[in-house]
Image 1 (spheres, rainbow over the protein chains, first blue to last red):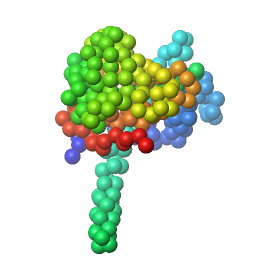
Image 2 (cartoon, rainbow over the protein chains, first blue to last red):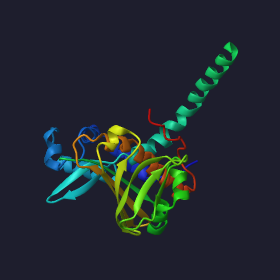
Image 3 (cartoon, each protein chain N blue to C red):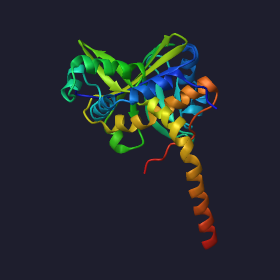
Length: 111
Length: 152
């Protein structure tokens, strides 16, 4: 079994908040936004949005790049891929295998 | 913004030298890049190709900047799908930065056009490749082994 990773705790905590998930959706729709642009769509203070972005950045779900005087926020999908592999794909596999076995058996009996 | 950019960041518990060699060694690359590998001398100005296990060239271009083990910039043009090839060259920048016991790997892939299909196509691949690379360097085994699907 995989070791407990403190990175996973940061990740799941970051995802366990509707405003932060909304920020991720906004970046998914339009990547590379400034703080000002992100604030336009949220009913929240600039300071509140900054705090949420800090949590997302600590979990590596958001990465920032400086472009001149602006700081652009990007959605970083790599940790989500890791969650998928660790917590979703593993549990799907036996069911997918059962379906594949069934298909093979049925096709064989009709061959 | 008048361009399409995707950014990928992963922290890998390894050294910059090991990560650089993982990013540039064709045999090592095949293990985490679903059988694909790069052919290049990886020095500034040298040519670069991304090739599958049957020798088909998927992408090609040149090394714009090489500063081992810190920074690699590739001018990257897709070759298999005509609509993606038509978009011309994209720029892929890999930056390696030591952070505590790990190396922060940042990959930026961009094209000077809005709504790029090329950047959208690579955006599906990079997270899986980086996730595999991280697993391979940290645990010695990859997480996924599905092959790349051929274009229709």
